[in-house]
Picture 1 (tube, rainbow, N blue to C red):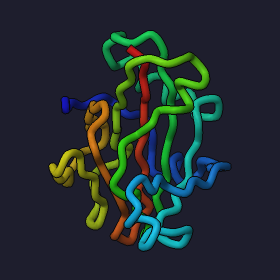
Picture 2 (picture 1 turned 90 degrees about the vertical axis):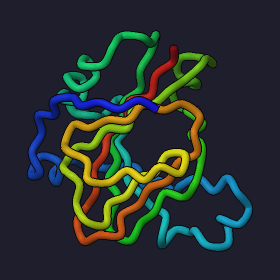
Picture 3 (picture 1 turned 60 degrees about the vertical axis):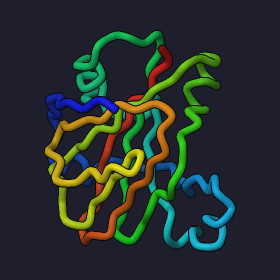
Length: 160
């Protein structure tokens, strides 16, 4: 897992005005998750590659070009929603560009707020600053919003 920071040129008002057409029910890769996670507690909203705003390409251009293809998305996680323990499949980029070794950048679009949480391989990630990023590959991870404010993050998924 690598960490760093990029410049993010977006305001809270701009994030709040984004249109999120896709409601996503999160992965349930372990049988016990079917018992506890459902539409009312593991629903997030996502804007996918073709619909992300132009400023996301400014973010992408700050990362090393050590990939052949990138796929962008922005997530909105309302209070009370969780992203259960899972490993990303990266199926959208592989469907579009073919199979290959993939990795992902998780990018904070705002400073951390109480109740916002992310964890990679049993390492809690809190107190982040706008623009902080984490690069990981096939690690188990989870996240959620136990706070009172919307949580916005971006993802850049890459094929090496």
